[in-house]
Image (cartoon, rainbow, N blue to C red; front, side, top):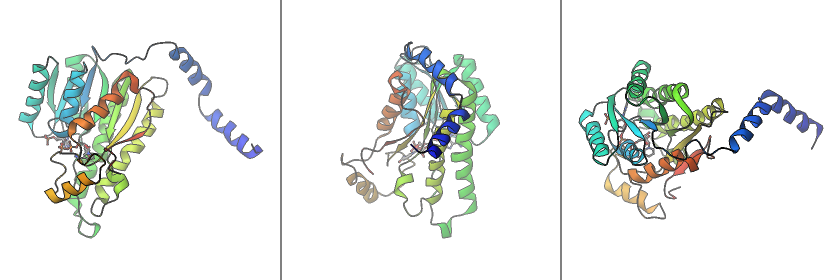
Amino acid sequence: MSDTSRRALLALAAATPAAALAARASAQATTLPAQSTSAGRAAIVSGSSRGIGAATAKRLARDGFAVTVNYLTNADLAAQVVRDIEAAGGRAIARQADVADPAAVRALFDAHDDAFGGVDVVISNAAIMNVAPFARFEDAAFDRMIATNIKGSFNVLREAARRVRDGGRIVTLASTSIKAKRATHGGYAATKAAQEIFAGVLSKELAGRRISVNAIAPGPTNTALLDVPPPLREQAAQMTPYGRIGEPEDIANAIAALCSGDGEWINGQLVFANGGFM
Ligand SMILES: NC(=O)c1ccc[n+]([C@@H]2O[C@H](COP(=O)([O-])OP(=O)(O)OC[C@H]3O[C@@H](n4cnc5c(N)ncnc54)[C@H](OP(=O)(O)O)[C@@H]3O)[C@@H](O)[C@H]2O)c1
C-alpha cells in the first residue's frame, strides 16, 4: 500500500469513532439479536390502506408486531386492514396522516406510541407515481410527488430516527425504476433513488444502536399504482424469469425478512425485490 493510501485510510479511521464502535460491536456480538422475536414489538407502515403497504402491515402483524396502519383518504380500506389483522389474532390501529405534513407524521407516531408504547419497525411506504415526458410534466404533479415521496418519506424516516427502539428496523420503499430509467418515469424514479441515499445515510447515523436501515426496490407489482394497460403488464411479466409481475405479498415477504432477527446484517443497502425483472 502506498504512503498516500495509508495516510488516507488513517485519516478516515480517525474521522470515525472506530474504537467506540468496535467495543460496542464486540459486546453485542456475544448477545442474541435484539430482534430474535417480534412478540411485544410494534410497527408503523405508512400508506398501508392498500397495495404493498396493506400486505406488509398484515404480514408484520402475522409475525407478531402490533401495527399502525396509515392512510391518506381511504379510511374504509384502512379499517378493513385492521379488521383483517384482528381477525387473524393480531393488534392494529388505523390513523390518517398525510406524510407530506411533518406535524401529521408526528401525530401519527404519537398515536402509535399511545396505543402500543413504542415503535420497533418503521416502513416508509406511502408514495404516488406521476409520470409524463419532461416536456409535458406539469408543475403541480411534479411538486406533489416530491412532497409525498421525498419530503414525506423524509418526514417518516426523521420521526423513525428519533423514536425506533434499539435493535429495530427501518425500511423505505425505492423502485426498480431507478435501474429501468423508462421514458416518462424521470420524476418518479428520482424520488425513489432518494430512498437509497436516505437508507444508507440513516444506517450510519444510527450506528451503535443495532438498527438496520434499508431501501427495498420492488419491480412491477400488482397494485393500483401500476396504472398500465394489460398488454404492458403482460410485457413486464414476460421480463421476469417467473413469467409474472410481483404481488404485494412478494414484497411484504421481502420486507418481513429484513425486519426479522435474521435480517440484521443487511444494513444500509438497496435491495431489489423484483423476481429477476432487471
Ligand atoms: N406497485 C408497483 O409496481 C411498485 C413498484 C416499485 C415500487 N413501488 C413502491 O411501493 C410503495 C407502495 O406502492 P403501492 O403500489 O402499494 O401503492 P398504492 O397501491 O398506490 O398505495 C399507496 C398507499 O399510499 C397511501 N398514500 C398515498 N399518498 C399518501 C400520503 N401523502 N400520506 C399517506 N399515505 C399516502 C395510500 O393511501 P390511500 O389509500 O388513503 O390513498 C395507499 O395506502 C410505494 O412507495 C411505491 O413507490 C411500487
